[in-house]
Amino acid sequence: MGERSCMGSIGISVLKEETNMLKGIAASQGIAIAKVYKLEQPVISIEKKEAVVEEELQRLDAALAKTVADIERIREIASKQLAEEELAIFDAHLMMANDPEFKGQIEEMIRGEGVNADYAADFVGRMTVQMFESMDNEYFKERAADVKDVTFRLNCNLAGVIIPDLATLDEPVVVVAEDLTPSDTGSLNKEFARGFVTEIGGRTSHSAIMARSLELPAVVGCSGILETAKANDMIIMDAIEGVVILNPTAEQIEEYEAKQAAFLEEKKALLTLKDAESKSLDGHKVLLVGNIGSPDDLEGVIANGGEGVGLFRTEFLYMQSENDFPSEEVQFEAYKKVVEGMNGKPVVIRTLDIGGDKKLNYYSFDAEMNPFLGVRAIRFCLNNHEVFRTQLRALLRASAFGKLCIMFPMIATMQEFRDAKKIYNEERRALIDKGITVGDVEVGIMIEIPAAAVMADRLAKEVDFFSIGTNDLIQYSMAADRMSEKVSYLYQPLNPAILRLVKMAIDGAHANGKWCGMCGEMAGDELAAPLLLGLGLDEFSMSASSVLKTRKLINGLSYAEMKEVAEKAINLDTMEEVVELVQSTINK
Picture 1 (spheres, one colour):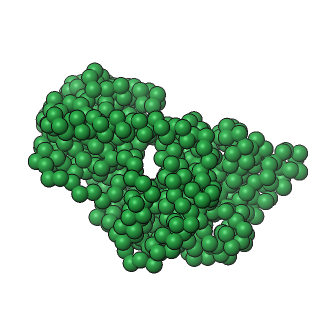
Picture 2 (cartoon, rainbow, N blue to C red):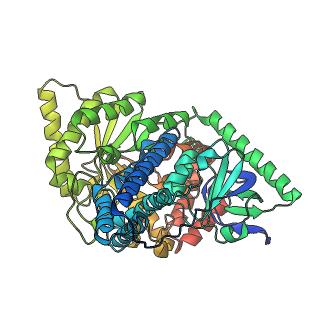
Picture 3 (cartoon, one colour):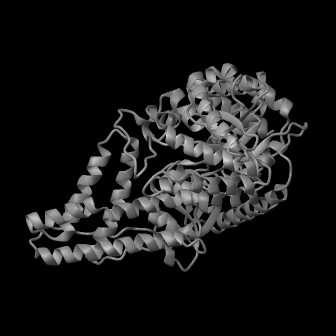
């Protein structure tokens, strides 16, 4: 297949042993050569002291006001370079900083014990973090990080300590830190921040996700970087192979400057494929489309040659709404903007996928032992008909402006699909009876529960299409929480068991004359794409930045050969064997 491109996804590489070389996880591709900017947060000494209550309450008010203003300023900076989906983290921080209960607990401690505001704020913050971290609910565990971030900022403001501000960078640097908070990542000055390296983290950590949105090179989980790197050291960061070189030699700098130039040249060359078809060497066509979280993300899909939208995550409309579920009109305008903006290209919009780790400020979910396996997604909608009907009306009205596909998430049984489709049909008929124009809509489901994959041949008789949600399909199949580091080794997209489930879904769709797409992370992975092509996947949906490199890959593959490779892969025993098979094929 020719030599492997430097823009490929991370494979297995053998590194030359170098005393100045560290290995991490390539989270966002690119190469950077610059000075080290070591991000070290100030250490605050907080002691319990007797204090004048009124004076401390005034100090608390002033510090909280500054904390809110700081977060609002950072959000404003971040809004110029991040999508609404990524900005939601700052809204969560503002909510915490403005929370009257949080403030009230601090005030109560100041009044009740006559202590200084610093001690009270730190104590309440630590207790709140411990409470969240002790919960079984993954959403609330993640909120602990938000509380830490807000409390730290509040404590700094109480102490009059300045927090390092990455918005003020004034020379090219690679930021080195233990981890980056949402505030850090959102305020990065892209003009001078060439990338970042963190001691901890993985490909799904918030800093990694934001790096990909900002198109900044990032290496995470680079153990030892904090101890080894010194401020103003020269650093080479290879975020293609996940390699960091400190105080490189002149020869190493020259080598990586050449690699960097080749990477940028290839990135530029990919733009020539923007208007090309996604077609294998032997003429087999597929669609490469984009995942979006808001109408504003559409620009990136179009700029990168996306042939449609394969997943519009509508839950962000609901999560950004402050006091109630978004109205039909608000939703209609958002859906219309996306459908109309794609100029007749297909747009797949997922109905509300809330629950699990995605909560709403204005709705209280019942406590569940495992909310990821509880009342979420289509289950929530079938228990809340009016919420579901409002969304369906907005979607149906928007369908008059382009090619719309509506997708129900987390379908486990045929009856769930029939119940959801019945409500859809009722709302469609009601709109038509009122003389409202409704387009020809395809109605499909996400295959993300193993039971649905196994029953794909039966489900395909009643649905118009499938879209495989691999993120959940993998974690449910392997019984492994994909956010848990200790079982992360089980998150194996290329495990033969997962490939077999994918094949069941594709074959079930095709046997009934229906199409099958994929909207999970797997669709944009270089090692997975050849297998998915060979398995017959019709539509690959991915982040916008992955579209062109995936098109280049597929356009250089033989469909007939990939069918043979995929057949071999599903009959192997381990993920490692599958990886070796694919690498040996695409590196020929």
